[in-house]
Image (cartoon, rainbow, N blue to C red; front, side, top):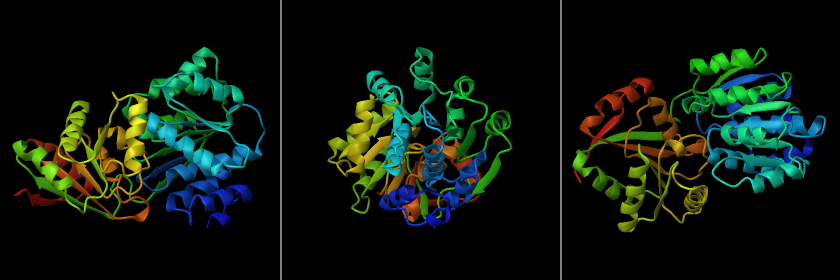
Length: 369
């Protein structure tokens, strides 16, 4: 139970109000060494509760340590993850005296500057915008005592390593570093060796595999019938909340329009949408205004969207690990879900790569509708 950890009474009350009943395996493994001040490298499957696993020890250590300036820094690969993580930090840090702010691109500087000037204890940031603030002299990281790299493998995929190195040069060498990742490529191990002190290595659960509560299948579909198959699938009554993944931004836009024209309430999210459009689409989907959210892989990592009943891969991802992250958007927190993929003859190599990574063959269904 959370009471077994050395957490303050206010934090324990916030945990209870947030609806957390008992720690997940990754929280049980990561929180104790993090509270001791150890550097840790954690690999755990998507949807396993990693956010609370680093937020709770950070809030405890920052709230009981010396005051003054930014003392907790969380780096994330996307705006959505930064916003979401900052929201969790505010919820769990309520009444602790800890102020949190999200620093990310795609929006104006002024609201972020106002938050920084007002005094912030924990900053959740994307690397690019954080470097902009460092260059402008509007943020000082010399007092950071705890650094978290969230979705570290995704940050390497997105080419953030040079920016991470620049940010590290602004941090004190005596900091604690917590690194969370779903997979462990060599670049992450190299970062751990260079920037961490004798880190505790924790591998929790079946890393790089979908949750066991996800039912997976592929529909073998002729290329000309692919969009028709998607429309007929999402119109089934059992599909309450559907997340559709495409490989390109243009296709995401086109499919969202086609679904809307067919009477299915749908929105889309990808990197070319404005921040306001992305937030409106996500909030509408969470609130049930949209039954279908069409997305590129920007939504495959880290986004905490509860209640997704079905994930449909309109396009198979080029990288097998991205399939795992997409599928992990459903069946979160022990729930069940379904993951369906529309596979044409051109997808044979991609499907083989996914099945090789999973270690088993996915169930085949012929599309006869």
